[in-house]
Image (cartoon, rainbow, N blue to C red):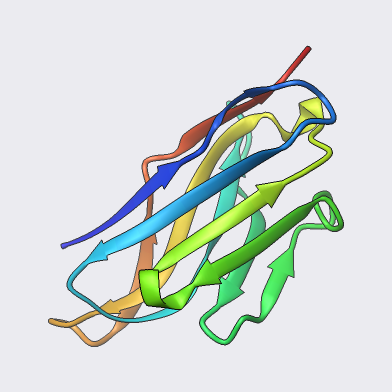
Length: 121
């Protein structure tokens, strides 16, 4: 059983910063990629940023230069530092991981429960 546990969401004023964390736990054999997606009500879930185990990163154009994704492979944890936040960044942020369990040894997608980020004055 694998769990992705997110933390760090909340309410922040425009221009402010937040840091999200997501820790993967359970019977993990290997992790290919971890990252963050976000979803507004009535909209499709969209990529925010991903990072591979070899530290290759990918960002949505809308967050490039404002958000930074990092990971700690030893802790199976991914972080998203969000700076210069805008009201349009308001969404539920979901942690994502593509990983293989000890039992299956085959990579598949896993999702966290989501954490609300609200940017408002």
